[in-house]
Amino acid sequence: MHIPDNYLSPATCAVMGAAMVPVWTKSVNKIKLEIPKAKIPLLGVGAAFSFLMMMFNVPLPGGTTGHAVGGTLLAILLGPFAACISVTVALLIQALMFGDGGILAFGANCFNMAFVLPFLGYYVYKFIKDRVKTEKGEFVGIAVGSYAGINVAALCAAIEFGIQPLLFKDSTGQALYCPYPLSISIPAMTIPHLLVAGIVEVVFTVAIVTFIKNVSPGTIYEGAKQKTKAIYGLIVALICLTPLGLLATGTAWGEWGTDEINEVATGGNILGFVPKGMAKGFSFEAVMPDYAVSGLPDIAGYILSAAAGVAILIILFKVISSLKKDKAGINIG
Image 1: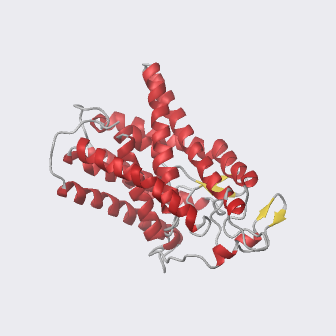
Image 2: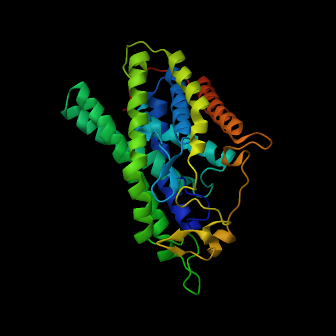
Image 3: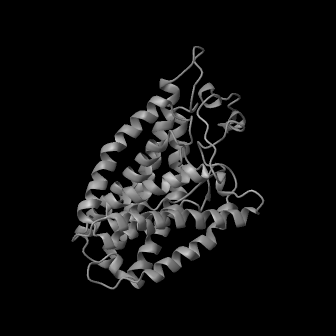
């Protein structure tokens, strides 16, 4: 679901980035006012969970791959505004360090995965939880909310892809950016997410919420015990398991490079060209592209990338916490 650079026009990227500015502003203000200094590092832990979940690629129907995001998970644990910032920072680290998601497309990726996903997922969860006041009702809310969140986020990405050939063409009528119209992009993105990626999102979300409720309920409930060692232990375990994401072969839909998009077959037809806006578009060289480290085996590079990304996220939010003036906080859910 990470939209690379040059699949969306600069105008689309600008609009999506502008749409996120008030969301980021509101989220940051909420965190400043309502999250106590002691809990700021939890945003780094949340960002680490999201970062790692996005490394576990799974095969999807059609020969592509996908992954969970963890937006609803973070919204349940931290509140939707905090989740927005955590996922945003995780996406930023992915784009800058690992080339996963575009720099120009950063606003669009954040709109889908840091705004639509956590907010929709959280409010669906809360709607069900508030009406079915049992433990079973809560878990139904978690499952339905996380499933709805990632699938609507995928739909948003599909629409962003699909409007490109409608709005941006060269003088011959050929698409300048993403060449696939809505009739192709929507089913190509939504069906695999409905069938597989949404289920993976539910499994991760339910499993991690259950784990945290059992070992560190204070992360969720005020006044309960908070045991961060167990949570960090889970993060370390996930880092070690990330190479499982390498087992899924193929490229995620809409993330083909210019060296392969002209050979992509859709409906039995080869595309046969590289859109000019993609061929001559913005280029950025990440530090560790595709979570690989030169000279290391893929598995070692993947683990090192996971560890580096998690370390940066956790340290970053700890630094932010050290700069924040302490004040009483309330749950911002």
